[in-house]
Length: 274
Figure 1: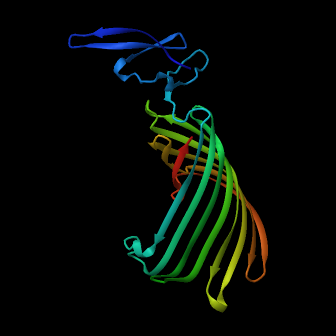
Figure 2: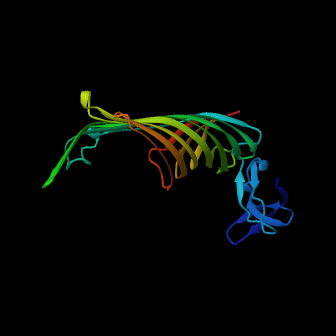
Figure 3: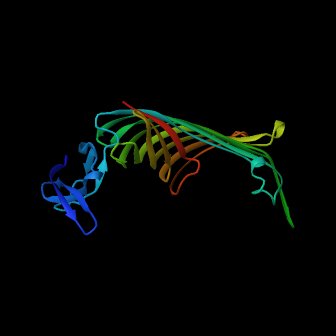
């Protein structure tokens, strides 16, 4: 809804005179706003819809205009090696482990209305890690592990809904919350030992998931923006099939939920708006 402006008024005190312009909202509510703070283009203001007869006066700025297309890619990378964390393992001896994660997710979306985008996201992720050697000897406790490896490759596609909140009249800074519902499939291998003593378990995984990912977006160029998002909540349902090196097979289903920031799901991306 576009705001209508009335005549200017002046309010004075002993020290100064402040000039205000009246902004008419829904033809019934008058909100005084200093002229110096009025946006150049008042059509960029988006007012929250009133609840019944009550207008909360919440103001939002247009960040992604209606009928615009957006596209881009987000990347998440995590790399950990025990050689770089000597303080953490100062009490442990003979330790050699590593963990690497990589996630790439291209996406495309369409603004069905101002600051509301729906779209499709594809993804590929890989997790690899291993314990080459781990020895712990505390009094009567003696633990020794070595030659343990884990790999996980998965492909996914999901539908997403984004709600943006513009933070400034020029549309440069914004917040968003992304809700996704998707499906992924992949395979994992967990192995122990090497050579003739090698034992492994292969697992094929299918997953349905729902996720909430808030984030921050900034337009660094007129039609190009950067964004950072965090996975804070999710619901998953998995069905898996397993096969061991000994020939045994099995299957299972499981579900779960989490409500915390996932350090392995921090995504940095580039967005193009056309």
